Image (cartoon, rainbow, N blue to C red; front, side, top):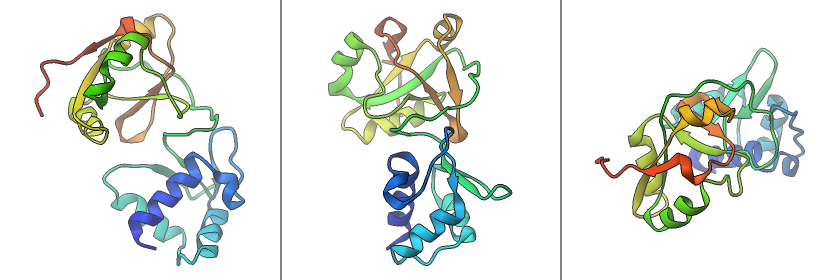
Length: 182
């Protein structure tokens, strides 16, 4: 297995199906690091904790966090099973979401929904949102009035790699960032 495939496999195990490898996630999404190493080794991957740490640092994004002291690892975001994200944090006044242009009408009508994930993913950086949108087709960037949402009691969670998580965002808090240029 190549490093990119190994990284994707780790993300899959930590975000979506820890039980598929015999891992047990706690309520915060943490799994035992030694058990993850063992699960990878069972699949023919020559892995140890140092390898996993190097793999995480070699990626363009931080996808998981490692707590060596407590022998555990978890995905920083993207979970499809329920996890406690931590304490709500005051977000920047405006956050951005990247999507494909063809999805704009439904998003502007129904709002941003987590779909198959537990949370909606946002960024404080327009360029990051634009890059995310490109993965889904012709990109568009949506602005979310995070200040107003937070003032109404909407929780926000800041993960590593400048990803902001929140629940569904009603359409009246969203607008298209027409002035964006990459």
